Image (cartoon, rainbow, N blue to C red; front, side, top):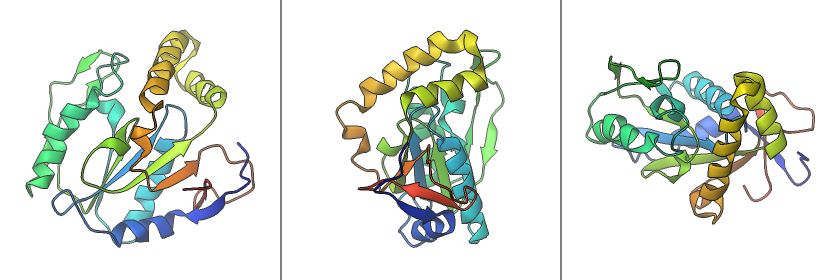
Length: 206
């Protein structure tokens, strides 16, 4: 993807921006890192979480893939995250949750405790459409590259699932409503030289 019309941001700078904003999920600052599968949002979320910790924040990082029902439904994670994590945090309490086991194709029996952090970073498709966000990021990359990345990670045998999932994403993002609350649009496939551990490209208009 061309970086013409973009500017460079830093994870440290974005972390300061997050910590300078109000918490809306009780005392927790909720940050969404949204984007289609294969766009690079997991990498972005990890680097932002690292910068937030470096700035002194207690950070929890969750991935919506851990709250799905396999490939069945794009937003299956939402009621689980809202009930198990968002609601307790908003009430000033700690949380607990169950992860989806992709190998066994079911939710795990055990509940994992999650202490209430200063910042909760949630990475996943549709995460920017939840309530009580302090900041939302959308990571973008071309469809061909996203599919290539996915098949490298998951294997060619899962191509039908990936293609169906990408079609579901197209429908979800089609009317633009899911992007209205996004604060920063990020290039997940920058072509210009930069320091990827510390810098990212902000797309024009983001």
